[in-house]
Image 1 (tube, one colour):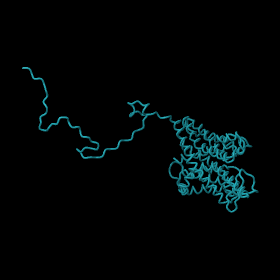
Image 2 (image 1 turned 180 degrees about the horizontal axis):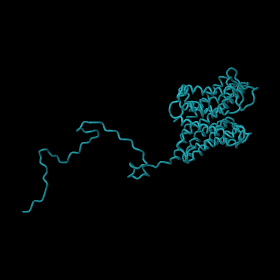
Image 3 (image 1 turned 120 degrees about the horizontal axis):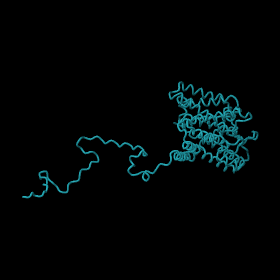
Image 4 (image 1 turned 135 degrees about the vertical axis):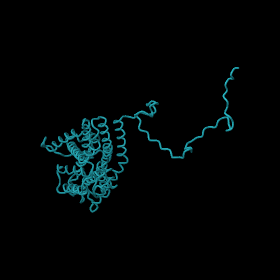
Length: 422
């Protein structure tokens, strides 16, 4: 089961993160909703917890399934993150190069650090945190009665850490993304457990519920500039995911259209590749400014990771153009890197979960090749076409003629017996 509408939400929120990080002195840049779009990373975490509970709820207590799960997840995240890091290294010539930071970014282990790590492709901190939360989920899968109780215990501990109940001086930021990811995974798992108890029937007043959820999210991120992720916003994310899992309202029908489904399919590429695209644009404008003898950057803007681009009236259009360019790069990366990487990971995971299949021609005895339980059920033979009695069916071959012709009037040959003795 694939939740198409929730995938579309993932793509739309990834676009908002791209608008947030886009270094353009545009009108969009200063919208409160755009400046608060970083909270959608937590939406991704909650959604991942919900989807994994759906996909792996019946695979408990098996180390093979836990290992196969991690192989699939690594194949989903790691190849494209490595490509994005390599592109940034080429673009910047290894600017700010530190071997330790490079290796951590390459193997996505930034989430296990407790200090600031903003280097090159800094949005990958959330990918590292999600991968670490996958490892927690894989360990929870080893529980004989399923991952629910271990994951909820881990989520409660992470929530206590984030809330300052254990360390009052603790700051919940990208530095400690592991705790954010685990707590949100547990919340998404709780939302799935509630979905199971609500049954499979249609959601009453689905369109009204969907409009209310979207309006509530927009209201919460548009009022004031958020300094953190409020707990009530996380609850809103969980309720929104729960409501849209039915896919029964008017917004669900809109988000099921082909363009939104494509955005959902490319959402990870949009998120992980937008920083290489923005760095390439800044470097290109810098070279163009040097050639033309002018600057395309705002000298009065506060210092940031990337300089703010000011192209005058064309700045808004350039901001949207950077988003379109990121989507195009993500679509290309899906066909060249992400899709093939996932396919290879699925093959490896199947081999780990089920083991290699025996070669039927060499390992199965001849007398068991059609009767052994290890073979799949053979397809039923097609029924023969109806025919009139007495007429030969298809494939009928007449018997061969005897070597000695015999007429109907000729008597049958007499049996030769020895003559009786007189």
